[in-house]
Image (cartoon, rainbow, N blue to C red; front, side, top):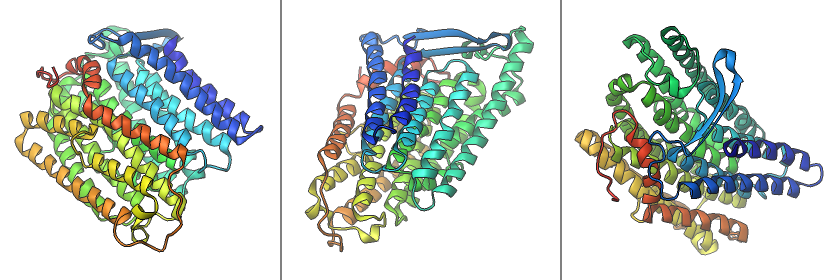
Length: 497
């Protein structure tokens, strides 16, 4: 029942945090932290159980739970974890704890309801990463939606209501397309075998006509593409990021976007191996467009938070490119990029929130000269900007290098165009450093540098992104067997062997 408890603890913790607000806001925050730490200990237990086991995911689940739910309709409560889902579940709880800590002083109204929504989002994301029943996967996919809507619309900034509705409509439309595709698979499998089921493992290899397979696969691709997001389904992201509270931006950038990438790796490619192979060239073109477009538009922003949001569009283009490049090297890079982007961009949103809390604006024109006044904040800002541009030593460098190396083996022109995104990333990252931390001192004086709590949060994130850059094999080794089993994934010798 360990998998069930990992999801249940944030759900219960959210309810208790809401109730605890009647006593004090501090108690509500502490309850939320305790629930996430308890779930983290269970994930650590799974990690220790997988130590030395590189076969996790090669048809062998590290842990699996199968319970009847609505058996007359072929619906089961099925949870399982392999190397890929274990890494992403760990990232989810890590950033969930960061989100609680970073909102410690920022959120002062309706604290209990805030933590209720935050923990239920975390629970929904964990459910997405652990579900094996497709209908259960859809339930958790939708569970993420409503709490995030409240998080943006209640605790967001000036245009929060419009941004929340835009987020809701885009993701809900994508989710409905996915539900239709799931039902097509359900009935197609039932007609062929007489067994109507939503079991992921039984649905693998369901025979479909080319036309039905294409349109069914497209439903999944659009749903996952909206969440990733891919161009042109990305327009909800800058608004949602800009208006969300800091914790909401951390969850959005670090986790919600990753559910789209996970869905492609876990469901789209295995369920539609041949059709997805036909889609791959177009998906790679879309990925390259997203890399270049996101970087160019980021450079034109005057709102610092919106600038960081557009960098996510560019960085997630590398993830899409790695997924469809068709070899283990590129897909290992995509998984590393998922983790590295979650840490580094989540940290950038934290820094933007800390700056806004001090000067009450996100406008770049009103920033400058922070290095002399708030040196600790500025030093962390420099580090995470360097991580974002892919400097060697950080996890982002290894991730993007592997994606480009794997893409080069599939398409030299697309690899070259994608590499231009790294040049553009250097431009906008160094521009942030110059504009915010150097240059002329603005009218803002007497700012407080980072508190002990803020310094601790950012120091942990620095350690994580450095660790990922210096020891990427920890992630590659445990996810490699999973990626090797994904269709169209070439068997390329691991670069870290």
